[in-house]
Image (cartoon, rainbow, N blue to C red; front, side, top):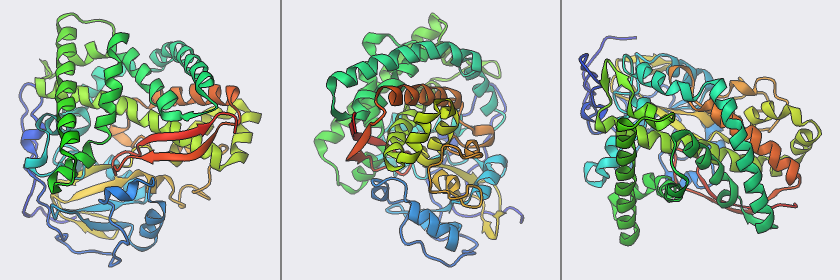
Length: 459
């Protein structure tokens, strides 16, 4: 580890030890990391594809590229376009684990958790600020107090109490699938429905207001591609106007309902968020916007895509489907293995707060480090025969699909509970369910977003 030095685009230190939380959006400068790294590359290999290419992910995780990088350049430099900024990509389990645990050297707040927030002229101002002013973009001393405010809704006791309502909803959805079959879109009829129901039950959103949240999720999953295309003029103007309007409506609704919960708190997660305090101060409007965006996206998207991804796995690995049908009590371990294989969150970013080193590679202060969880979850150094779906895998629970360390996903228990309940019920009702090959995956390198998945209920 070397001494600090100044490079173009060094992020300012996260400051403010007074009341409340300093706005991350005010601390983060525009991404100006050079197109080439300050210390050069320890591994001369040039990746065959760039992990910043959104279209690459419309076929799912680029598993072959992860394998190539593990063998040739486990820490590889990817120059971004069109901004010209670059980032380090990590695909090895131990490298990612080390970065996740060292939150002082690798900051969430210094640059946020996305690779690139786009040029100022292409950003949706509310979406940009909310994406930064949120719990997962905080370091200590602010991250843990805000995290604790959410914790009562993610304890084993709370999750167990939620299970009864989840089981009832699952049976209702399966009844509707039976009526709609024999072939249907699994995302529309089940994968999008269950996690949104669960989230709304936790948040306390009235049933007659839930339909709009489905529409907003559709737009959120396309936000990354929409803003990228906006920057190069490659987007339908009518869709862009619709997108911008829907994002404005999403935040207006969130502000209204959080204001109501601050004035009239109830026993729900929205009330906990609205009345959370850090250093004796309630959250600012900016952090309320960020909390609303985070809980809506993170509380829905990972479970939704894990459900769809697991149906694909059951189709591709019929022997493992047979194993689960023969021993339903092994579903808990099977869920861990399914999440490892699907890896619904593709990456998280950190920013180096000082000159440092990961393995053989020197990293300069201000440079971006991006952890590709799919690479870690199929690292053969940790998971033998890593590309095989094996519901009896002894260490499946060691996956990093929910992150690792202080920033591990708070909703992990809720996601696992939903997946176990849903997959057990699906296989009991439709033991021969299979995909038909009809699939759409959104152009995103942040989340593995399956937007359509055709299934045949009876194989």
